[in-house]
Length: 328
Image (cartoon, helix red, strand yellow):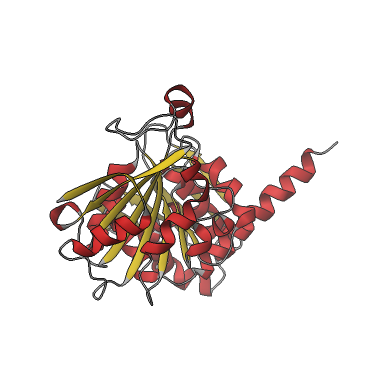
């Protein structure tokens, strides 16, 4: 069920929320704040609602107004009942039941001046005594931890794979990293990292890695992170080979004194591990990760990922070094 409130206030939204069935926060494990635009709203809610089945939560989605749209029409509600002469106002939706996953969902649409202080709009809806997670499914702020909504959260999730230039976006976020920040490009390669770690552990103990090559999609943020993680783990340079038309990681080849170890994706669900010696490849289950799966993992963790911090720090150091070399 969806209840729509036009030109409303946070007090009225709270009253309406309390009147809706299932609005009690007693069984919720967190509050999830989503900062998105109108185009990305429904996809973000679909992923959040799916993840909420395992992590019951209150979802508060803040829909940023389109600056170009406001410049033409002025701030107004979607049903047109609010005068465009007003300096700003707040529209809202309350979604419960099958429209809201395992909890309730608030969709806040601030217009004009109401959009200038979104943190004050969100605070009345934060559940007490549970963690707060902020998620930017589309464009993130320059520094998530110091942004108005990021300051409210202990965990801040960005999603650079959804952007047009994900690697550049990741490089921009790296210097601003604060413990509690995480990007879904990193979560996407959890299974790859586990597979590589278990496969290479005996070789790494002997210090017998001579080279690493990772093949896959060009300009992929997950591959950029995987390269730096592999470099930290193996202490050797990692070469990247682009595979145009491929999505994600195609293969990882590790050169050792006894030959090559190759982990290659076979299809959407499986990967094959080939070891030196000519034996038959070992086929393992490794499904591609969907948005619900990655959100599920991050909502389950809710603690700083120290390894991601190390990888992003090497990313930031590399970017700074490159900038110094470019100077005359």
